Image 1 (cartoon, rainbow, N blue to C red):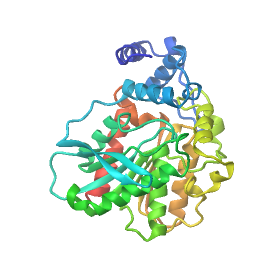
Image 2 (image 1 turned 90 degrees about the vertical axis):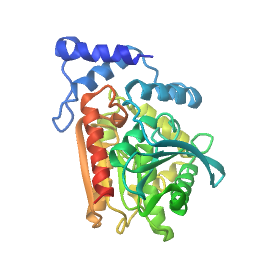
Image 3 (image 1 turned 180 degrees about the horizontal axis):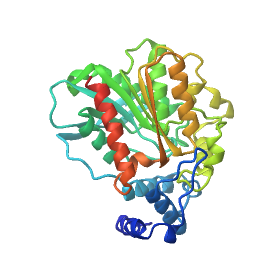
Image 4 (image 1 turned 45 degrees about the horizontal axis):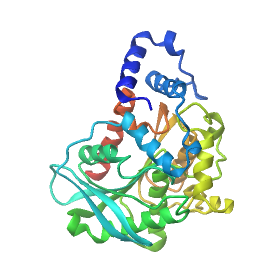
Length: 343
């Protein structure tokens, strides 16, 4: 495993030597070059023979994924309080972690956060630094949930847990000291999928909806029909073989890929959904489906902003501890959250 200190030294060398050591960064189909530090990191990981998650099996992949996130995560922000709780889920207890920032008048807005990891890996610890940063810089209480994962609990278990967590937060606004009118949903990758699905499900149920959606490189189309899946299938952190493995574990039947609870882009009518901020990366297999979902929301009259960080790869939201441009992007995203929740 490439250590954080070694990675930082290598990135420092790359800033000095640049192209002679690692070659020129590739450009994507839109002519945008890959961030030089990202190019260096990806190259180092490849030369270090980093095992692909799909070659490890679920249990070992979960350990490897958490190790990878710790390699690049931002410093863990000090907060007023971080508390683990258990709530009642559809199939038993669910662990949630509540991040309460310092400052700000009570009640605070809240963000229900769903972690990424292809519905197979990831958890409260892998995304702890990201949730801390979001809580502090958005001045919002963040509630993260350890939803059930595949293959032990395939689709729609994660969806059921994600919806149950949102309902629990809404039912416990007093104990959480949060404003019921300012409860947002957010997530990255698989978590962005869940955040989008929760917004749709709350609309279908007639339940009070989220006030806002933050969808960070969300998976919105399980058919993988968008061109970016072919363009960035190899060499840009998230490989096509890993995506295949994630979905093979998550979906029990290929027809489930067309279920709107798996593919929110398959929903015919997305009107009336909460305002959204959709984030994509320029070298990401999920780029095009994230953009397609943003455009579908816009076409339906949903107030939506779309931001493409063109020089980044999938996972950059957790790379701010190593990649300077990723740290800036994380700050930018947290600023969007603060503006949405503190109008």
